[in-house]
Image: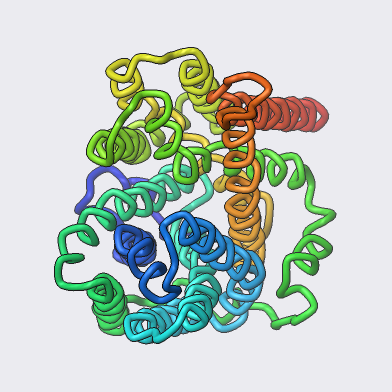
Length: 420
């Protein structure tokens, strides 16, 4: 790993160009996901000739379709990156992304829309080789902050995307899809011209279809020391934090009486605070106290927020708290860095592919659990009115993740003492 520099993150201008490209890929995909959100209800009602209530169920199925295909294809994309290098895999995915969104812009029926979301989900599995670019280009001690930059870029897309989608929706329900396609095409051209391969031929390994699926990745990685404690914590945490994208709009409408403007503002506040934390806080903090302790701090902050939403009924207080939840942005990059450090350089794509599959699995589980709980405890036949019930579940998931991270930290301390 000689020749890599941790000083790369001291200021934005010093960031390795390869990492800047990985950030651009993450931004492109999250903007593409977010830019179509404002028009999806109208488009589904238009194509399905249905009411808003029925369209809501179809919209949930579209989200699940995207997540299922991302879950299935993430190990494949990661393993292809380990075999052929990151550059061809990422560039091919960007090309497919551009074509897919262009096709969806002219979708004549709901079936075409579902096919488009399936393809977009499979291509969205490019997160694994994008993250592997960071693992290739940075030493292990710098990866926490590097993954934090990727997280900030991804989060920024969810702030920017819906705003752009809302502005251009006046041009028609298909316009945001064309904009997403154009953005992917621009990123593809930039990558063709400027992105250099990060995985040299001598660090590549043969491709194995047996390992290029979620089950195969689990079997292949099963003997990596301590990995399942961290992988379990990662799955639990991503499921816990997914409560915001899948439930917040419904919860805030019921609990605080907010409209779309306030809901969007609160989500933007949380997203901005997380981005600031991931760019400016995570590096110095993990350098000072280590990633395990930093993760515990992030989880504690998230759990405090979940308790607050369970008991608080005052809207302006909730808005203030949303500005303080950036601390939870520490967790995912730090867990990713610890997982990345557990395997050799020629298996980064495989490991990070499994990571992406876990995130997709969490994206499937979150709406099924949180939305069902919210309906159960807020409906007219609810056994007791408890709109905070989903946040209680998120608290339990985060607490269990904290326990697993604590066990992993104890294991590491014991291993170091045993080496003395």
